[in-house]
Amino acid sequence: MRAVVQRVSRGEVSVGGEMVSSIGKGFVVLVGISIDDNENDVMYMADKIVNLRVFEDEEGKMNLSLLDIGGEVLLVSQFTLLGDVRKGRRPNFMMAQKPQEALKYFNLLVKEIEKRGVSVKTGIFQAMMKVLIENDGPVTILIDSKKVF
Image (tube, rainbow, N blue to C red):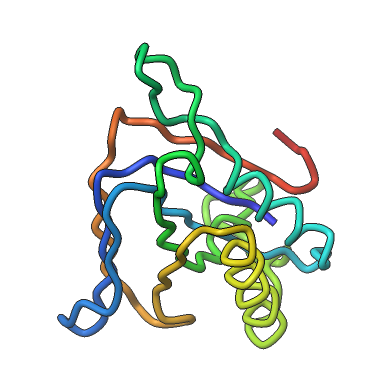
């Protein structure tokens, strides 16, 4: 499981010109689910997202988590994060999970983040979305449950 975590002042998802989800301060998380992901990957990712300390404390140091600031998550499925461009010029998506199985893990990730005390909003799975990301910083963190980076 791979995620791009962006610290935001706000985020929104629109489908077909209609806003379907929005958050204030927190994270917009783009998540790609791999063919070899399982529940352990979901737990790892939920823990990292909820406890990632990238919000500034009173001294200006990145030391606070979503839990500390009462932040929210806008979680957006993005299979293209699993694209492999090592060979050729067009991405190969062979490592991306099939949609039905990916949706199962995506929904589990939503539940696990919420279970840890953070509000989660989502885009619409498999829809063509417009994602508004108002970066705060900017602060962007890459997380891979297989610890590739």
